[in-house]
Length: 113
Length: 118
Image 1 (cartoon, rainbow over the protein chains, first blue to last red):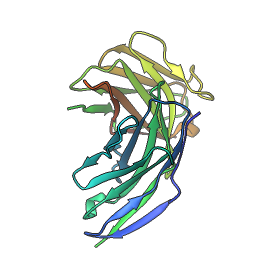
Image 2 (cartoon, rainbow over the protein chains, first blue to last red; image 1 turned 180 degrees about the vertical axis):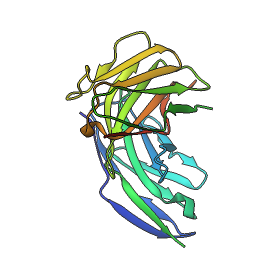
Image 3 (cartoon, chains in turn yellow, brown; image 1 turned 45 degrees about the vertical axis):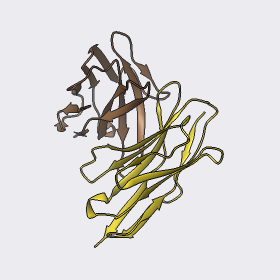
């Protein structure tokens, strides 16, 4: 069975600063993918970043990057130069061979002006 | 690309009636779609996996006779909540699985449907 743990229910960051959201997971599969999605107040789930477990290089998407530590089963999300529009609920997820997304409980990120 | 629509965005119905929610992949074909339910301030709960041309696979505890899923085409999956009751009130979200050329696959989500049963 796969599990995902997000240990920070709430986080806050000052505009233009950097924040890191933590995520740890457990899986017995050798081939899996990791995701971060954001859910703003509109409740639309938006893909932020994706990481294939077989790739050692950390994924980056503009201001968003991950620190993927496979041995430690850690997949943290770093948001640089935080903007007001980054305020949202962030969900970490892992998917394996059955392609079902297993979700963490989410981290609510507030961005202070 | 990879846009998923849902209709309706919100619906209010009387107890005992049935409600149909549509999930469409607008610019790609999706052999697999997923239906989720989300309660306020909680994570997404997978209800079922919808496969084109075959029966849906339901998660444990989800009543398949209450939540009917039909995936009749590569761009459309529907969720019908039959004989809805107030406890079925929730936010329902669909997603469609996209296969990338590099063999990775990703779920893209619809905007959700808020169901209120009176």
